[in-house]
Amino acid sequence: MSKITMVQVGKDNLAEKYSIPEDINWLVLEPENLAEKVAQLNSEEKKRRRRLGFNMVLVTDMDEETDLMALDNFVAAHTVFYASTVESYTEDQEQFFKKKLAKSILPENMDEFMSNLEFKFFGGQYGDNAAVKPHRYMINPGYKGEYKIEGQKYLILDDDFGDEYYPIISNTYNIDTIKDRKLEFWLEYIKDPGIEIKLEFSRPANGYLGLDLDTWSVTSDNLNKPIVIDGKNAETQFSINISIKGKGKIKLGSVHQRQSRINQGFFLNGGQRIVDENRDELFYLFDPGDMKPPLNVYFSGYKRAEGFEGYFMLKRMKSPFILVTDTRLEGGSFYLGSKTLEDGLTKAIKEKLDWLGFSNEQLVLSGLSMGTFGAMYYGLSLEPYAIILGKPLLGVGDIALNGRLHRPNVFDTALDVMLARTGENSKEAAKELNEVFWDKFAKSSLKNTKIYTSYMKEDDYDPNAFYNLTHKAKKIEKVIGHGYTGRHNDNSPAIGRWFLTEYNHVLNEIRNGEMNGL
Image (cartoon, rainbow, N blue to C red):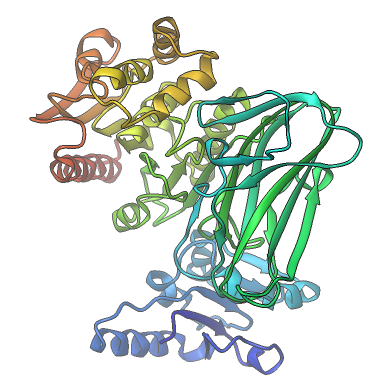
């Protein structure tokens, strides 16, 4: 099969009406023998030692005999759609649509849905801000005013730039495009009302050796949503320039670039975005799984490439799950943020619990390294059944301080987190940043929450994390831990194995409790 395989369950082949790209394998499966055909396809793929999988399923016809559950193991949530004329005849059909979070398509919207399929339902994910971030900006050599770089978060300018757009920033490295992918951009900035911004994109019109450029720009009024670049469907490079006009102060942050799915989610199909008044973002992805307890929430660890982490790990557990990722700074900002961001994420998790009909006693939070802080921090608000941690990090201020002697130039992100949260980098600021967690802890209760954690005994990031969990955090009544010799990153495989072992233990505990009516 081709890389992108899409299924239509129906009788009238939509490929005869719409132009389907050549690299999409469009399969039409008749409703009455759907299960048999899927079993045949699966058998053929096994002979080739490949896994059967569909990037998208569209149901245009079915009857009471149509076995939609035959598709269950081969298509992900958020990638099932059905014509609005289709009705569920059986509980299994209704259950299939519910667990896949299927969406209905009205006849007048079918043309739009069938356009750009290769851009909406491709496999994989990618995003980063490597090419366009403040400490790599090229500032116009003709600019004689003052500027300041605030860590890796912002370039700060405060000046009268005139009534015409003044070109102030160029990116140091060009940005690659990929054939059959659209790119999506999001600029972080905070500005005074008197400042206007223009983001300008340009690339060679006739190949790398040509002198002519294709150029297009986006101004402030259209920067309130991610910019999707159509351009030419070819592999090339382009550059980004930032111009500003007006008088006042502006803090320019990174330009994030992602492979866009247009209107089908962020990073992966169904990915959701929380954005605050300062244009900072958090992302989450919900998958209902088998719709049986518990709901597992996994916080991504430090990662330079933007996107969700742990998808296949959580998928194999079969339970409902939420993946959370933090794309700010370099590798993440420990899931700390404005009230808008933090409340938005807490609300999203509670909404999914309610949708599933679960209580907080059927909730498990988890994470590795940077993700452990997110799991613990939001666990203080959600009071879950269990929190599972691998290489716990609780004292972000301590992590920043330890960098000077224990890890010089290895993890300066902690300094940027401290600067963003407290406005300065100092011992006092480190203490203030530590207290962000412990102040929240003092107002919460984890009396009924079990903590499972594997840790490094000579951890060079936060050496006191496990001690604080078992001594300082007296409100936590049950902590199950296992220590390994070494520094923070010395034995990640062992940490990972222990993490999965305890995860399976917690899942079995909850499932057995449900079966016994507890």
